[in-house]
Length: 440
Image 1 (cartoon, rainbow, N blue to C red):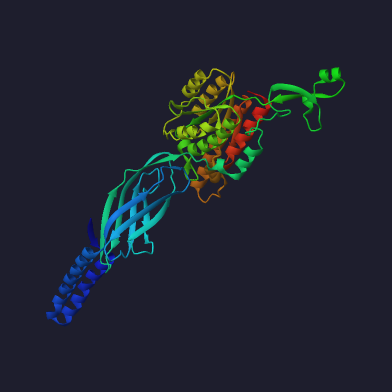
Image 2 (image 1 turned 30 degrees about the vertical axis):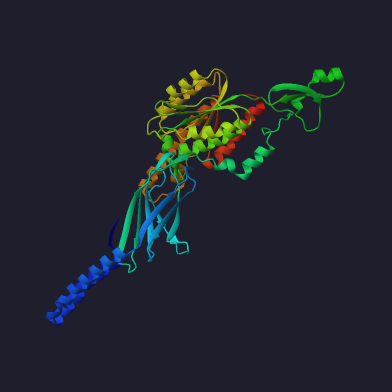
């Protein structure tokens, strides 16, 4: 523990110099007044630091885990001994850059109104990167009764915070209502006109799909009959996430890969509820993460923990190696959802070649996050020649990207492109359409 002067003490000591100069100009014998002023303040500063309250216990409460982009609350409590309570009390905590962009957070502590000398305060941080965030050193300082001296202590924390992918969309009332009313809910029911597995013949009712009418059976029984289908389950769904350099670029403060992970987990929650087997796969210059196929909503938390291990790789993505490795691991037809982005035409061509080898056996779906930055540059009114050049370059990049997406669609691959807020919902709708068509 140590103490040092406050700003008030520094200003008061510095004030003695002009006072001493003025008095010496009037009466030379009074120059000693300034020196006496400084000595007096130094003695008061020392006294203030010695009689200030002494800390007995400091407790820092940190949640063991949090979600990226979601507020996380930290609590600090300090107990002091002595009759004189601290006048001003504040804390400063060093953090891993995963937990806060500035790497630090400030606490303002207040007394609880009792005479027990306990002060407490809270502060909120917003994690900006997935992974394990470490809590660093805590500095706590308070002033003496005269406000001339700060007392300060330091405490090293050994706590960590696991920053997980954000799944707030799953807890939203809209998704919960959808799950309650969805055909893939917890109740086992039969669904007319849905799925691809034939279940039985039933008398045709208004509202049923006319394409399900069995004309031969209707002729034999002299009444209109329709085929009922059961929803096919136990399909294999793979979410392949590109964590290369292009996906590390931010969108509204968070990297693209984190936006993609949130959308993938939202859809994975639906696929697990639907009874399908779900897996995560990530890649950059080489394959990074490959989880086993999991089924049942009880395994969703495991998927979330596995997704937290997907790192940020500032490398060029190798689509050929990644997708060929993924193809070699799949023994049956699967739905492969690829989250990626591309700026290099050469890398895009290699991606097209790798995707062409997948569609012979598997159903492939590409998810592309809309580039709002490029659109903003193009739509901005130019004010200089540099703005015009920048807009032309952005337009060329956007046209190249649209050309690649057009080629993917011509190959028979579905492509979802949109804002990150809408991509999860659109992906769920596409997945449900695939299930209803029985494409798997």
